[in-house]
Length: 329
Length: 272
Image 1 (cartoon, each protein chain N blue to C red):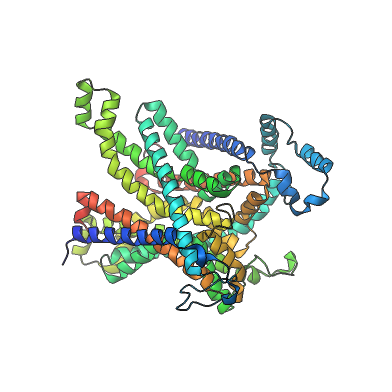
Image 2 (tube, chains in turn purple, green; image 1 turned 45 degrees about the vertical axis):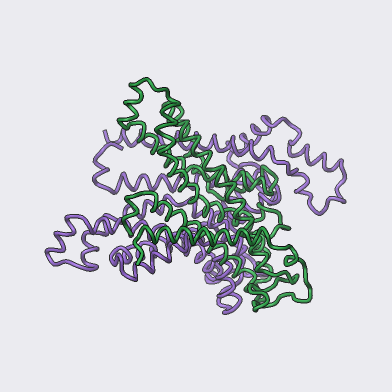
């Protein structure tokens, strides 16, 4: 019985993902194909005078830009189904390879920022919720509300100015030191280049989790079972540890998984500020230089990324929470 | 001592006054202050130039104010369009089950792609510039508000007085005009104002990435992305003050929206 439900759940979610990807592909392809930007023009760029009209015609022919839009879509669709997502004009390699390589760098950045902001947000939320109404609570709440209005990339610029230019603790940008072969870069160097982008990304990511956790903890602390525990003489961190933590951790973790979209958006900005060679920088370059296959590939990839986050959030509720686990999924 | 309601009202008035000052300053400022003045380039903040000057000797305070006004204009337009889309779709969803399903599907669809990526794509489709930004922002910010309004409509539709109206033979349009719209109006208004902070921040972000407003306009995103080239030479004021001003403006809009919400709802109004 249980397995049948599980299978149904998986099938339902797969169908949802498939329809989502199809819809996103069609819409993004339509949007991009009506762009007034000429891909050949932006590809040639500054070499315009050295490229003859015949050569341009050849490029157009080679990319299949003369074919009708629907045919172009199916050509691209064939590439997607084959798995290589077409050839990137910027990197001259299959889009899937570029994405995989770039995503690895982004993953290091996003994962460290995600964990950092999750842990700090959760802790701040607990402290703030326990001390509701005191100056500590006000301070944390004020911090969170200020962060909500802070442009993430400006935060990055401030960090660069303070830690890289003034204090010289960290490098100004890039993912590895300049002039060193990729194989020779030590792990420590990579980490040094990761610190500031990750910090930028996590500072702004804290607010959501912290405010949510605070709200949940305040609700829990007003419950009857907490009142009973207090009557027995429990208080402070012990009380929260025994009666609060389990109740508030699940929603917080779920919320954090569901925020993959914002995480990705933040990474795009942070990578731009620090010239960090990740997926976010690639999407900006693809957009600015008219690399349509890469742009479409990253759109699809980011959709799957966000979907995965939401799926995990959904599953966590269903699998971990015993009250929901017993019920139908 | 003022009570909570009065305090809320004072905050609202102050926020409106401050925002209008920024806007009027930006609109009526003479453009002389934006001109290139090579005698006074790269000046640190001083009494003459409160925000310092850039590498062409332009006054950063003047550029920042212009940029904020522009952001506000873009934000106003995009937030208005977004709120309009949200209202229309939530009303459409209330018609029948099929429409409701379609609207929820559309909401899920928009939310399934990261905001920034969607903005880059739409701006690319429009070839960049003002139109691309406004359309992009308008098309990406309605889902959260639409979701809110949709559930509100569902709730109103199941209310008894709506049922009574139906029994009395009132048309759907009549119910829409007399029961649903008046109920939605305050939600819509507050939602509209609370869209501002998001819209303005995203506008700055997308412009910063190079997809938004063109570089000859003094938008905050442009100012900040230009300042990146001068960071390593220690010209910190190029980025610091414009960003801080943007933060303050966004925070003011946030404050305004939240306090209007407080004042509008008697339940929220009693609590701190």
